[in-house]
Image (cartoon, rainbow, N blue to C red; front, top):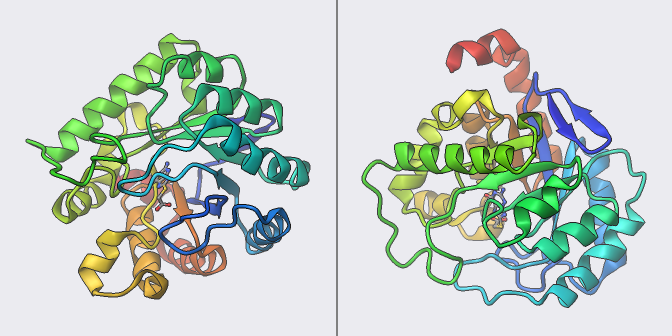
Length: 281
Ligand code: 7PJ
């Protein structure tokens, strides 16, 4: 079970988190900044397609990105949060800024998705003051520098240790374990070999069985493997989502909700029951 504001999400099957991108410079070409109506329409299409959670992001985290100002981030987020109030699925906000966390939670968000794992000063307290869920993601470096020279001794052990330490910091700050989701951060300070190793060992990344979120949809690791441009990566994204689910990921962060839901339906019918998932761990 994941405690997520006023929602409780069962984790007996992998959940689909639909990406609603409110930045102007998205790498995947789906940025909807400045067009609230289109963003809300896009969100509704994802809900109708079976999204279990929506992830609203207004800050660019693409490699080399310049940080977005708080005011600008909130100008993009708050109207969309407001328009989606009562939409029936929990709304997550992808941000690392405590001010944005507080305003988003006050504006109806049920989850905070932080690529910096609540390391900005004040972030732990901003989240602890609410009952939202929180995703703690691993990143080596910062978006500006992370792809320059990723380096690990043992990537699986190091990512696991980091996630454990951040989970402990969150719990010490008063965030109950039932609110936590952990994420290896595919593509954030990792080479293709690092990403593949993390995907192979997904289930081992989580201390104490906390749910793992995998975000691989359309990412450059898929481009490196297939030679395909970002708009052609649907098949590769579905394949990666299924492999992550099979290896224990419980939340899949994706652009293509309907297609991912269909792929997971087949997987679940064949072998995705809770007993099998437990055996994989
Ligand atoms: C991730 C994310 C991810 C989590 C982005 C993109 C780049 N949050 N935000 N995990 N990626 N938790 O959408 O591909 O992998 S932004």
